[in-house]
Length: 138
Image (cartoon, rainbow, N blue to C red; front, side):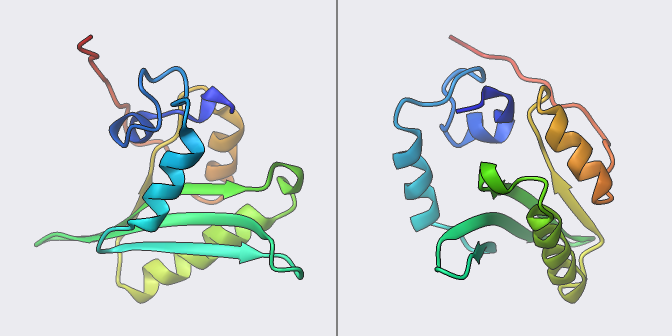
């Protein structure tokens, strides 16, 4: 429910209708997205010893005529398990996948107010490279 997670990706996929609040049927929309992963998308799931999902990530693998890259579209860790190393473990696994695929870059976007995530991604070796601007036509 934390709106600081909203970034342009959530607007583009209709998970947020205004960039400030989540869609009222967020869980339904997110589950629909998981059921219809596109070509080149990879879902990674981490489960505990009881089979309960505790972390997940979605990565889009891309290749242009000049460069191979990945886009870390989503990374989520069960709130009670954050700061336990699971997120870092997921990013490390994704890094391995990127290297196996010959990627030169991994991109991600994060809500501008999600400072905790920004610090996490920086610890994982990511660096801010640009700013995303938006214009909303109401």
